[in-house]
Length: 178
Image (cartoon, rainbow, N blue to C red; front, side, top):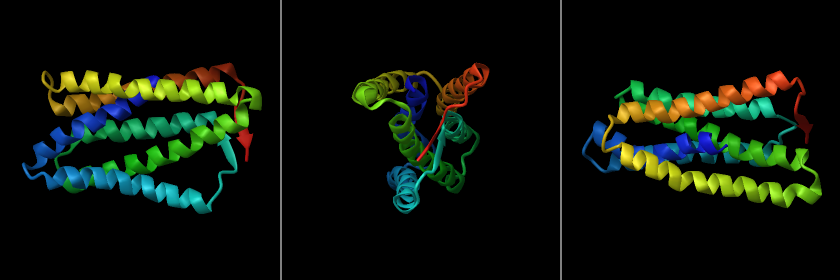
């Protein structure tokens, strides 16, 4: 979770530079953030009326993989409409992950350990934000913005694929029913 979050949180540092590459007009940054927010909002609306019946660890890893692939794909386009579509999809997937993880933890962790597990997960997640801001904030002065989007996505892709392979190697399916 820590390494995937570094890549996902790093893009928030990179978005202003992406908007600047497209245009000097500040409204483009607003469009980028609005697009991501609309994706997350749509996912939230869907899950407010539709329940998740089955949660597998593999689905969480695949969601991280899709999110990271979308982030990495931002390095390949300068077309603003395509950027907005990618960012919208990243927002959709981010919202999906935000529902899947707590659901999986609720169903997988014994009730007497739930508070501890959630606290550790929140600490890891919150620690990744300043680390990502530092890494990408400093890196933006030295590297092309396109490379940084690729690096942010690659970090998530490598982490997700590694997690998928480790999970498959264990041979124990991790699923819950809700």
